[in-house]
Image (cartoon, rainbow, N blue to C red; front, side, top):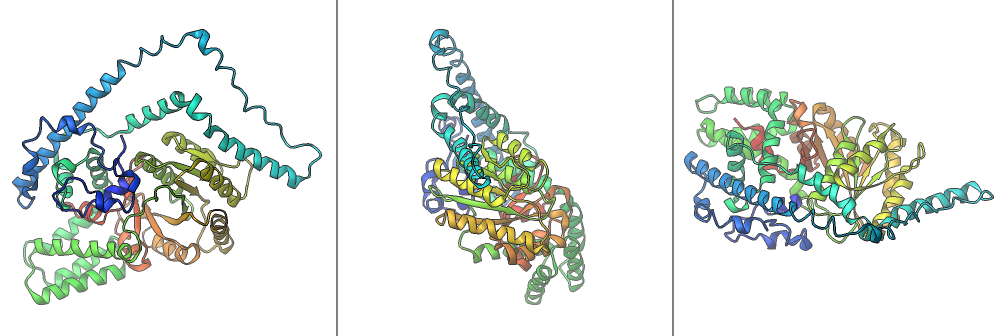
Length: 509
Protein backbone atom coordinates (compact mmCIF):
# COMPACT_ATOMS: atom_id res chain seq x y z
CA UNK A 1 0.00 0.00 0.00
CA UNK A 2 1.34 3.44 -1.03
CA UNK A 3 0.78 6.41 1.28
CA UNK A 4 2.48 9.61 0.16
CA UNK A 5 3.63 11.20 3.41
CA UNK A 6 5.09 14.18 1.58
CA UNK A 7 1.79 14.92 -0.11
CA UNK A 8 -0.14 14.29 3.10
CA UNK A 9 1.50 17.24 4.80
CA UNK A 10 0.54 19.56 1.94
CA UNK A 11 -3.10 18.54 2.17
CA UNK A 12 -3.47 19.40 5.86
CA UNK A 13 -4.62 23.04 5.64
CA UNK A 14 -7.49 22.17 3.30
CA UNK A 15 -10.80 22.68 5.13
CA UNK A 16 -12.83 22.57 1.93
CA UNK A 17 -15.79 20.20 1.80
CA UNK A 18 -14.55 18.43 -1.31
CA UNK A 19 -13.01 15.04 -0.48
CA UNK A 20 -10.20 15.34 -3.05
CA UNK A 21 -7.42 17.83 -2.12
CA UNK A 22 -5.96 17.72 -5.64
CA UNK A 23 -5.38 21.45 -6.35
CA UNK A 24 -3.09 21.94 -3.35
CA UNK A 25 -1.04 18.81 -3.87
CA UNK A 26 -0.61 19.23 -7.61
CA UNK A 27 2.21 21.70 -7.16
CA UNK A 28 4.36 19.22 -5.24
CA UNK A 29 3.54 15.91 -6.90
CA UNK A 30 1.43 16.14 -10.07
CA UNK A 31 2.22 12.61 -11.10
CA UNK A 32 1.02 11.23 -7.80
CA UNK A 33 -2.48 12.76 -7.84
CA UNK A 34 -4.06 9.39 -8.29
CA UNK A 35 -1.96 7.82 -5.54
CA UNK A 36 -2.53 10.44 -2.84
CA UNK A 37 -5.98 9.19 -1.86
CA UNK A 38 -4.95 5.49 -1.67
CA UNK A 39 -8.45 4.20 -1.18
CA UNK A 40 -9.08 1.47 -3.73
CA UNK A 41 -10.10 -0.73 -0.83
CA UNK A 42 -12.15 1.99 0.82
CA UNK A 43 -14.79 2.09 -1.91
CA UNK A 44 -16.36 -1.24 -0.98
CA UNK A 45 -15.88 -0.39 2.69
CA UNK A 46 -17.79 2.89 2.38
CA UNK A 47 -21.00 0.96 1.85
CA UNK A 48 -21.35 -0.46 5.39
CA UNK A 49 -20.46 2.90 6.98
CA UNK A 50 -22.34 5.62 5.09
CA UNK A 51 -24.28 6.85 8.11
CA UNK A 52 -21.44 8.10 10.36
CA UNK A 53 -19.63 9.89 7.52
CA UNK A 54 -21.92 12.98 7.42
CA UNK A 55 -21.59 13.33 11.19
CA UNK A 56 -17.83 13.99 10.89
CA UNK A 57 -18.00 17.77 10.31
CA UNK A 58 -19.81 18.19 13.63
CA UNK A 59 -16.59 19.55 15.15
CA UNK A 60 -14.48 18.52 18.10
CA UNK A 61 -15.28 21.40 20.43
CA UNK A 62 -16.94 19.13 23.02
CA UNK A 63 -15.47 15.95 24.45
CA UNK A 64 -18.55 13.94 23.46
CA UNK A 65 -18.32 15.16 19.89
CA UNK A 66 -14.60 14.34 19.72
CA UNK A 67 -15.26 10.88 21.14
CA UNK A 68 -18.05 10.24 18.64
CA UNK A 69 -15.77 11.43 15.81
CA UNK A 70 -13.03 9.06 16.98
CA UNK A 71 -15.50 6.16 17.12
CA UNK A 72 -16.58 6.81 13.55
CA UNK A 73 -12.97 6.90 12.39
CA UNK A 74 -12.17 3.70 14.30
CA UNK A 75 -15.19 1.86 12.85
CA UNK A 76 -14.24 2.93 9.35
CA UNK A 77 -10.58 1.91 9.74
CA UNK A 78 -11.63 -1.43 11.22
CA UNK A 79 -13.97 -2.13 8.33
CA UNK A 80 -11.26 -1.09 5.89
CA UNK A 81 -8.73 -3.42 7.52
CA UNK A 82 -11.18 -6.33 7.48
CA UNK A 83 -11.88 -5.74 3.80
CA UNK A 84 -8.15 -5.61 3.08
CA UNK A 85 -7.63 -8.91 4.89
CA UNK A 86 -10.40 -10.49 2.80
CA UNK A 87 -8.78 -9.23 -0.38
CA UNK A 88 -5.40 -10.53 0.75
CA UNK A 89 -6.93 -13.92 1.51
CA UNK A 90 -8.51 -14.00 -1.94
CA UNK A 91 -5.17 -13.21 -3.56
CA UNK A 92 -3.43 -16.06 -1.76
CA UNK A 93 -5.66 -18.74 -3.28
CA UNK A 94 -4.87 -18.19 -6.99
CA UNK A 95 -1.11 -18.20 -6.33
CA UNK A 96 -0.66 -22.01 -6.26
CA UNK A 97 -2.36 -22.30 -9.68
CA UNK A 98 0.48 -20.92 -11.80
CA UNK A 99 3.00 -23.17 -10.03
CA UNK A 100 2.09 -26.40 -11.92
CA UNK A 101 1.66 -24.50 -15.20
CA UNK A 102 5.34 -23.90 -16.07
CA UNK A 103 6.73 -27.37 -16.97
CA UNK A 104 10.28 -28.32 -16.18
CA UNK A 105 11.52 -28.75 -19.81
CA UNK A 106 10.35 -25.28 -20.81
CA UNK A 107 12.00 -23.62 -17.85
CA UNK A 108 15.35 -25.27 -18.68
CA UNK A 109 16.24 -23.03 -21.68
CA UNK A 110 15.93 -19.68 -19.85
CA UNK A 111 18.07 -20.92 -16.94
CA UNK A 112 21.45 -20.77 -18.76
CA UNK A 113 21.87 -16.98 -18.38
CA UNK A 114 25.12 -16.64 -16.41
CA UNK A 115 26.44 -14.01 -18.86
CA UNK A 116 27.29 -11.16 -16.44
CA UNK A 117 30.25 -12.98 -14.79
CA UNK A 118 32.13 -12.78 -18.09
CA UNK A 119 33.65 -9.35 -17.37
CA UNK A 120 37.40 -9.29 -18.08
CA UNK A 121 39.51 -7.09 -15.81
CA UNK A 122 41.91 -4.46 -16.96
CA UNK A 123 44.92 -5.55 -18.97
CA UNK A 124 48.18 -6.19 -17.17
CA UNK A 125 50.08 -3.70 -19.31
CA UNK A 126 47.91 -0.71 -18.32
CA UNK A 127 49.06 2.01 -15.97
CA UNK A 128 47.51 2.55 -12.54
CA UNK A 129 45.37 5.43 -13.76
CA UNK A 130 44.12 3.39 -16.71
CA UNK A 131 43.36 0.43 -14.45
CA UNK A 132 41.42 2.68 -12.06
CA UNK A 133 39.43 4.11 -14.97
CA UNK A 134 38.70 0.59 -16.24
CA UNK A 135 37.56 -0.52 -12.79
CA UNK A 136 35.25 2.46 -12.48
CA UNK A 137 33.78 1.80 -15.91
CA UNK A 138 33.24 -1.83 -14.91
CA UNK A 139 31.44 -0.75 -11.71
CA UNK A 140 29.19 1.56 -13.70
CA UNK A 141 28.36 -1.29 -16.07
CA UNK A 142 27.53 -3.56 -13.14
CA UNK A 143 25.27 -0.89 -11.65
CA UNK A 144 23.42 -0.03 -14.83
CA UNK A 145 23.38 -3.51 -16.41
CA UNK A 146 20.68 -5.09 -14.18
CA UNK A 147 18.27 -2.27 -15.09
CA UNK A 148 17.36 -3.93 -18.42
CA UNK A 149 17.16 -7.66 -17.60
CA UNK A 150 15.48 -7.03 -14.23
CA UNK A 151 11.93 -6.71 -15.60
CA UNK A 152 12.34 -9.81 -17.73
CA UNK A 153 14.02 -12.32 -15.43
CA UNK A 154 13.73 -11.06 -11.87
CA UNK A 155 10.28 -9.52 -11.47
CA UNK A 156 8.83 -12.22 -9.27
CA UNK A 157 12.00 -13.21 -7.43
CA UNK A 158 12.95 -9.66 -6.43
CA UNK A 159 9.49 -8.18 -5.97
CA UNK A 160 8.05 -10.98 -3.88
CA UNK A 161 10.34 -10.63 -0.83
CA UNK A 162 10.19 -6.84 -1.02
CA UNK A 163 6.41 -6.92 -1.14
CA UNK A 164 6.31 -9.43 1.70
CA UNK A 165 8.49 -7.20 3.87
CA UNK A 166 6.36 -4.16 3.02
CA UNK A 167 3.17 -6.01 3.91
CA UNK A 168 4.69 -7.20 7.17
CA UNK A 169 5.68 -3.62 8.03
CA UNK A 170 2.19 -2.22 7.44
CA UNK A 171 0.62 -0.90 10.66
CA UNK A 172 -2.30 -2.69 12.23
CA UNK A 173 -5.28 -1.21 14.02
CA UNK A 174 -5.02 -1.55 17.78
CA UNK A 175 -7.57 -1.11 20.50
CA UNK A 176 -9.86 1.87 20.88
CA UNK A 177 -7.88 3.44 23.70
CA UNK A 178 -6.72 6.87 24.84
CA UNK A 179 -3.89 6.91 22.29
CA UNK A 180 -6.28 6.38 19.38
CA UNK A 181 -8.75 8.99 20.61
CA UNK A 182 -5.92 11.51 21.10
CA UNK A 183 -4.57 10.81 17.60
CA UNK A 184 -8.03 11.16 16.09
CA UNK A 185 -8.59 14.42 17.97
CA UNK A 186 -5.29 15.83 16.63
CA UNK A 187 -6.31 14.96 13.07
CA UNK A 188 -9.78 16.42 13.55
CA UNK A 189 -8.27 19.66 14.86
CA UNK A 190 -6.38 19.98 11.55
CA UNK A 191 -9.62 19.90 9.56
CA UNK A 192 -9.62 16.22 8.65
CA UNK A 193 -12.84 14.36 7.95
CA UNK A 194 -13.59 10.82 8.98
CA UNK A 195 -13.11 9.47 5.46
CA UNK A 196 -9.68 11.14 5.23
CA UNK A 197 -8.17 9.48 8.30
CA UNK A 198 -5.64 6.77 7.47
CA UNK A 199 -4.11 4.06 9.59
CA UNK A 200 -0.61 5.31 8.72
CA UNK A 201 -1.34 8.66 10.37
CA UNK A 202 -2.93 7.10 13.46
CA UNK A 203 0.05 4.77 13.87
CA UNK A 204 2.58 7.60 13.51
CA UNK A 205 0.83 9.91 15.98
CA UNK A 206 0.85 7.12 18.56
CA UNK A 207 4.58 6.60 17.97
CA UNK A 208 5.25 10.33 18.24
CA UNK A 209 3.37 10.62 21.52
CA UNK A 210 5.24 7.65 23.00
CA UNK A 211 8.55 9.00 21.69
CA UNK A 212 8.11 12.35 23.47
CA UNK A 213 7.15 10.66 26.74
CA UNK A 214 10.42 11.49 28.53
CA UNK A 215 10.30 15.15 27.56
CA UNK A 216 6.62 15.39 28.37
CA UNK A 217 6.94 13.84 31.84
CA UNK A 218 9.18 16.59 33.14
CA UNK A 219 7.99 19.46 30.98
CA UNK A 220 4.22 19.07 31.15
CA UNK A 221 4.16 18.13 34.83
CA UNK A 222 6.04 21.29 35.82
CA UNK A 223 4.02 23.35 33.34
CA UNK A 224 0.67 22.27 34.77
CA UNK A 225 1.93 22.83 38.29
CA UNK A 226 3.01 26.36 37.36
CA UNK A 227 -0.27 27.19 35.65
CA UNK A 228 -2.43 25.75 38.44
CA UNK A 229 -6.13 26.66 38.56
CA UNK A 230 -5.84 30.42 39.03
CA UNK A 231 -5.29 33.09 36.37
CA UNK A 232 -1.74 33.65 35.21
CA UNK A 233 0.48 36.01 37.18
CA UNK A 234 4.01 37.38 36.68
CA UNK A 235 5.28 34.87 39.25
CA UNK A 236 3.82 32.03 37.20
CA UNK A 237 5.65 33.35 34.13
CA UNK A 238 8.94 33.33 36.03
CA UNK A 239 8.42 29.66 36.89
CA UNK A 240 7.45 28.96 33.29
CA UNK A 241 10.72 30.54 32.14
CA UNK A 242 12.80 28.11 34.18
CA UNK A 243 10.68 25.20 32.92
CA UNK A 244 11.27 26.12 29.28
CA UNK A 245 15.00 26.56 29.81
CA UNK A 246 15.32 23.16 31.50
CA UNK A 247 13.68 21.58 28.45
CA UNK A 248 16.44 23.11 26.24
CA UNK A 249 14.00 25.38 24.47
CA UNK A 250 16.74 28.00 24.32
CA UNK A 251 17.10 31.54 25.61
CA UNK A 252 15.87 33.30 22.48
CA UNK A 253 12.77 31.14 22.07
CA UNK A 254 11.97 31.39 25.79
CA UNK A 255 12.23 35.19 25.70
CA UNK A 256 9.92 35.39 22.69
CA UNK A 257 7.28 33.17 24.28
CA UNK A 258 7.36 34.96 27.64
CA UNK A 259 7.25 38.37 26.01
CA UNK A 260 4.12 37.39 24.12
CA UNK A 261 2.54 36.05 27.33
CA UNK A 262 3.38 39.24 29.24
CA UNK A 263 1.77 41.37 26.55
CA UNK A 264 -1.31 39.18 26.76
CA UNK A 265 -1.43 39.52 30.55
CA UNK A 266 -1.31 43.32 30.26
CA UNK A 267 -4.36 43.25 28.01
CA UNK A 268 -6.66 40.82 29.84
CA UNK A 269 -6.92 38.17 32.54
CA UNK A 270 -5.71 34.81 31.22
CA UNK A 271 -6.96 31.59 32.77
CA UNK A 272 -4.83 28.40 32.71
CA UNK A 273 -6.68 26.83 29.76
CA UNK A 274 -6.31 29.95 27.64
CA UNK A 275 -2.68 30.29 28.73
CA UNK A 276 -1.94 26.74 27.58
CA UNK A 277 -3.67 27.32 24.25
CA UNK A 278 -1.76 30.57 23.75
CA UNK A 279 1.51 28.83 24.65
CA UNK A 280 0.88 26.17 22.00
CA UNK A 281 0.20 28.87 19.45
CA UNK A 282 3.46 30.63 20.25
CA UNK A 283 5.50 27.42 20.07
CA UNK A 284 3.99 26.54 16.70
CA UNK A 285 4.82 30.02 15.44
CA UNK A 286 8.47 29.59 16.42
CA UNK A 287 8.72 26.23 14.66
CA UNK A 288 6.96 27.44 11.50
CA UNK A 289 8.91 30.69 11.11
CA UNK A 290 11.94 29.15 9.25
CA UNK A 291 9.58 27.06 7.11
CA UNK A 292 7.53 30.09 6.08
CA UNK A 293 10.73 31.95 5.23
CA UNK A 294 11.77 29.23 2.77
CA UNK A 295 10.51 28.36 -0.67
CA UNK A 296 8.78 25.08 0.19
CA UNK A 297 6.51 24.28 3.09
CA UNK A 298 7.27 20.56 2.92
CA UNK A 299 10.54 19.06 1.75
CA UNK A 300 9.56 16.47 -0.84
CA UNK A 301 11.39 15.02 -3.86
CA UNK A 302 10.24 16.55 -7.12
CA UNK A 303 8.67 14.14 -9.56
CA UNK A 304 10.41 13.30 -12.84
CA UNK A 305 13.55 15.09 -11.70
CA UNK A 306 16.78 14.09 -10.00
CA UNK A 307 16.87 14.98 -6.29
CA UNK A 308 20.06 14.58 -4.24
CA UNK A 309 19.85 14.74 -0.45
CA UNK A 310 23.10 14.93 1.55
CA UNK A 311 22.99 13.83 5.19
CA UNK A 312 25.71 15.49 7.27
CA UNK A 313 26.50 15.72 10.98
CA UNK A 314 28.93 14.75 13.70
CA UNK A 315 29.73 11.19 14.74
CA UNK A 316 27.09 9.08 16.41
CA UNK A 317 23.97 11.15 15.69
CA UNK A 318 22.38 8.44 13.54
CA UNK A 319 23.03 9.60 9.96
CA UNK A 320 23.11 6.10 8.45
CA UNK A 321 20.03 4.98 10.35
CA UNK A 322 18.20 8.15 9.32
CA UNK A 323 19.20 7.55 5.71
CA UNK A 324 17.75 4.04 5.83
CA UNK A 325 14.48 5.33 7.29
CA UNK A 326 14.29 8.08 4.66
CA UNK A 327 14.78 5.48 1.94
CA UNK A 328 11.92 3.42 3.35
CA UNK A 329 9.76 6.53 3.62
CA UNK A 330 10.45 7.46 -0.01
CA UNK A 331 9.66 3.94 -1.24
CA UNK A 332 6.45 3.77 0.79
CA UNK A 333 5.46 7.16 -0.65
CA UNK A 334 5.91 5.93 -4.22
CA UNK A 335 9.32 7.38 -5.14
CA UNK A 336 12.22 5.61 -6.83
CA UNK A 337 15.29 5.81 -4.62
CA UNK A 338 19.03 5.08 -4.66
CA UNK A 339 21.58 5.15 -1.81
CA UNK A 340 25.17 6.36 -2.17
CA UNK A 341 27.43 4.91 0.54
CA UNK A 342 29.84 7.86 0.68
CA UNK A 343 30.89 7.16 4.28
CA UNK A 344 34.14 5.47 3.30
CA UNK A 345 35.95 6.18 6.56
CA UNK A 346 33.97 4.42 9.30
CA UNK A 347 34.39 0.66 9.57
CA UNK A 348 31.40 -1.41 8.38
CA UNK A 349 29.55 1.72 7.24
CA UNK A 350 29.00 0.28 3.76
CA UNK A 351 27.67 -2.97 5.21
CA UNK A 352 25.27 -1.07 7.46
CA UNK A 353 23.94 0.95 4.54
CA UNK A 354 23.55 -2.24 2.51
CA UNK A 355 21.39 -3.78 5.24
CA UNK A 356 19.14 -0.73 5.29
CA UNK A 357 18.90 -0.86 1.50
CA UNK A 358 17.85 -4.52 1.60
CA UNK A 359 15.16 -3.79 4.19
CA UNK A 360 13.57 -1.19 1.90
CA UNK A 361 14.39 -2.77 -1.46
CA UNK A 362 16.67 0.14 -2.46
CA UNK A 363 19.87 -0.29 -4.48
CA UNK A 364 23.15 0.83 -2.87
CA UNK A 365 26.12 2.23 -4.79
CA UNK A 366 29.38 1.73 -2.91
CA UNK A 367 33.12 1.43 -3.45
CA UNK A 368 34.52 -1.70 -1.77
CA UNK A 369 38.04 -0.31 -1.55
CA UNK A 370 39.21 1.11 1.77
CA UNK A 371 39.28 4.91 2.24
CA UNK A 372 37.80 5.56 -1.18
CA UNK A 373 37.04 9.09 -2.30
CA UNK A 374 33.46 10.00 -1.24
CA UNK A 375 33.11 12.28 -4.26
CA UNK A 376 33.89 9.31 -6.54
CA UNK A 377 31.10 7.29 -4.91
CA UNK A 378 28.67 10.16 -5.42
CA UNK A 379 29.88 10.43 -9.03
CA UNK A 380 29.03 6.76 -9.64
CA UNK A 381 25.69 7.05 -7.84
CA UNK A 382 24.54 10.02 -9.90
CA UNK A 383 25.55 8.25 -13.09
CA UNK A 384 23.53 5.19 -12.09
CA UNK A 385 20.55 7.32 -11.05
CA UNK A 386 20.48 9.21 -14.34
CA UNK A 387 20.68 6.00 -16.35
CA UNK A 388 17.80 4.43 -14.39
CA UNK A 389 15.67 7.54 -14.09
CA UNK A 390 15.80 7.49 -10.28
CA UNK A 391 14.06 10.39 -8.56
CA UNK A 392 15.90 10.50 -5.22
CA UNK A 393 19.56 9.85 -4.34
CA UNK A 394 20.36 9.70 -0.62
CA UNK A 395 24.04 10.32 0.18
CA UNK A 396 25.50 9.00 3.42
CA UNK A 397 28.57 10.96 4.54
CA UNK A 398 31.16 10.32 7.21
CA UNK A 399 30.77 11.92 10.62
CA UNK A 400 32.87 15.01 11.14
CA UNK A 401 33.28 17.68 13.78
CA UNK A 402 32.24 21.18 12.84
CA UNK A 403 35.69 22.44 13.88
CA UNK A 404 37.63 20.29 11.36
CA UNK A 405 38.01 22.59 8.37
CA UNK A 406 39.61 19.98 6.11
CA UNK A 407 36.67 17.62 6.63
CA UNK A 408 34.20 20.41 6.04
CA UNK A 409 35.99 21.14 2.77
CA UNK A 410 35.40 17.53 1.80
CA UNK A 411 31.66 18.22 1.90
CA UNK A 412 32.25 21.14 -0.43
CA UNK A 413 34.01 18.82 -2.87
CA UNK A 414 31.00 16.50 -2.86
CA UNK A 415 28.69 19.45 -3.54
CA UNK A 416 30.87 20.61 -6.42
CA UNK A 417 30.84 17.10 -7.90
CA UNK A 418 27.05 17.04 -7.84
CA UNK A 419 26.78 20.50 -9.39
CA UNK A 420 29.21 19.65 -12.16
CA UNK A 421 27.75 16.25 -13.02
CA UNK A 422 24.04 17.04 -12.58
CA UNK A 423 23.46 20.81 -12.62
CA UNK A 424 19.73 20.24 -13.06
CA UNK A 425 19.45 18.23 -9.83
CA UNK A 426 17.71 19.59 -6.74
CA UNK A 427 20.29 19.35 -3.94
CA UNK A 428 19.35 19.43 -0.26
CA UNK A 429 21.82 19.35 2.61
CA UNK A 430 20.20 17.98 5.78
CA UNK A 431 21.89 18.13 9.17
CA UNK A 432 21.13 15.16 11.43
CA UNK A 433 20.94 16.24 15.08
CA UNK A 434 20.74 14.06 18.17
CA UNK A 435 18.04 15.49 20.45
CA UNK A 436 19.88 14.18 23.53
CA UNK A 437 22.77 16.59 22.88
CA UNK A 438 20.65 19.61 23.75
CA UNK A 439 22.35 22.98 23.30
CA UNK A 440 25.45 21.31 21.86
CA UNK A 441 23.29 20.29 18.92
CA UNK A 442 22.36 23.94 18.45
CA UNK A 443 26.03 24.91 18.19
CA UNK A 444 26.56 22.13 15.65
CA UNK A 445 23.65 23.42 13.59
CA UNK A 446 25.03 26.94 13.48
CA UNK A 447 28.54 25.76 12.55
CA UNK A 448 27.35 23.39 9.81
CA UNK A 449 24.98 26.03 8.46
CA UNK A 450 27.92 28.32 7.72
CA UNK A 451 30.20 25.62 6.26
CA UNK A 452 27.91 23.13 4.52
CA UNK A 453 25.07 25.30 3.19
CA UNK A 454 22.33 23.53 5.16
CA UNK A 455 18.74 23.60 3.95
CA UNK A 456 17.09 21.70 6.81
CA UNK A 457 17.45 19.64 9.97
CA UNK A 458 16.52 16.06 10.84
CA UNK A 459 15.95 15.68 14.58
CA UNK A 460 16.52 12.12 15.83
CA UNK A 461 16.42 10.13 19.09
CA UNK A 462 13.57 12.09 20.61
CA UNK A 463 12.43 8.93 22.37
CA UNK A 464 15.69 8.60 24.31
CA UNK A 465 15.98 12.15 25.60
CA UNK A 466 14.13 14.60 27.82
CA UNK A 467 15.43 17.52 25.73
CA UNK A 468 12.87 17.60 22.95
CA UNK A 469 12.70 21.38 23.33
CA UNK A 470 15.93 21.67 21.33
CA UNK A 471 13.71 21.70 18.24
CA UNK A 472 12.53 25.17 19.24
CA UNK A 473 16.11 26.34 19.83
CA UNK A 474 17.24 25.14 16.39
CA UNK A 475 14.30 26.82 14.66
CA UNK A 476 14.55 30.14 16.51
CA UNK A 477 18.31 30.67 16.96
CA UNK A 478 19.80 28.80 13.98
CA UNK A 479 16.93 29.75 11.68
CA UNK A 480 16.86 26.27 10.12
CA UNK A 481 13.60 24.51 9.25
CA UNK A 482 13.04 21.11 10.83
CA UNK A 483 12.15 18.75 7.99
CA UNK A 484 11.96 15.31 9.63
CA UNK A 485 11.81 13.95 13.16
CA UNK A 486 12.60 10.49 14.50
CA UNK A 487 10.82 9.21 17.59
CA UNK A 488 11.93 5.59 17.79
CA UNK A 489 14.24 2.86 16.55
CA UNK A 490 11.84 1.25 14.06
CA UNK A 491 12.05 1.74 10.33
CA UNK A 492 8.76 3.67 10.36
CA UNK A 493 9.69 5.93 13.28
CA UNK A 494 10.73 8.86 11.09
CA UNK A 495 8.26 11.12 9.32
CA UNK A 496 8.03 14.66 7.89
CA UNK A 497 7.83 17.33 10.56
CA UNK A 498 4.47 18.83 11.47
CA UNK A 499 4.59 21.62 14.04
CA UNK A 500 0.97 21.18 15.13
CA UNK A 501 1.37 17.47 15.84
CA UNK A 502 4.75 17.99 17.53
CA UNK A 503 3.44 20.62 19.94
CA UNK A 504 0.30 18.62 20.71
CA UNK A 505 2.40 15.53 21.45
CA UNK A 506 4.83 17.58 23.52
CA UNK A 507 2.11 19.15 25.66
CA UNK A 508 -0.32 16.22 25.77
CA UNK A 509 -1.68 15.78 29.29
